[in-house]
Image (cartoon, rainbow, N blue to C red; front, side, top):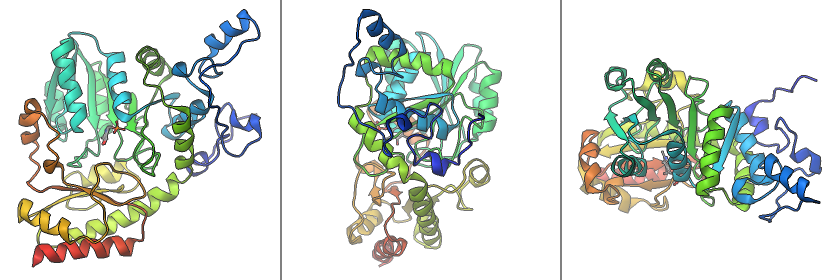
Length: 399
Ligand SMILES: Cc1ncc(COP(=O)(O)O)c(C=O)c1O
């Protein structure tokens, strides 16, 4: 029987909508959750078989787990990948993938405005493993062309980027990377599989913090990596050795979060587009970054490679940090919180958090976040309530 082709909206909901139909075998609508780290073999050959077949069958949870596997298969389907792997956090997904594909002395080309801790991990690879990294502004493909070398093993991209929301042309950059023989990795955390599909645009690896929109409720820390069977096998070997496997209970919560992903993304992205319109029309806003807003320099590419504008909006005021403080103090209910992508609307001012250590200060300056720059993650509350609270903040900046 040919496989049934289901829309991502259906795949996100049903645990049995995976090629193996694994969860359906249990006759439960929701995925079963086994709180066990070990499985029993009836005899030694069967125990050996469990080991060989893990993670598809249970053996020992560091190597994989049936509940986690259902979530991995679902993510692979959503990403259009052969296979996917889950991790205990987005940073575990990123660091394990890079350790799996890089060796001492290898060269990497990376976009310069990456998530802060990814930048810090690259610094760690440079200082401890002798990896060479050339950071470039990859919004201009010429910069990437010039930086790629015969020994470049990885082209590392993040789009939309955190927090400045740069848009990188995945298709053009993947083609450049492949011409140079590099593996193209895309951090797609700010979009997710219902908004953009890096693999379909030519990337080799699509990874993200699943703590954000995939889980969606600010209650799960997780990360995932999707790609070809061959790449995922390499990353799995490193994960099994270093051990950042996702806890099965977190996998179950992630599966539950995924069920509403299509609904959440549609609602949150619609509200975010309205917020971008509100901010774009406000005279005191000096910088607005929303992928589908016509003022964004990467707007045309974002319209091509993203199915909607996403849920993240960044902006700054002519009045700098003082204006930002007035804005934040005037909000009635939108919480100030560090993470993003959940049903909660939250707001962060990255330069108040001082994440960046000295050594990445120069690169941070290169992509110049204006003082008081605000990163807003638009949630699933009533759009009118979100817009009204932001209007209170804008009135305080105007005053
Ligand atoms: C773009 C991006 N990548 C990776 C991460 C790391 O994810 P986690 O916090 O789940 O480790 C984050 C977290 O904010 C992020 O925004």
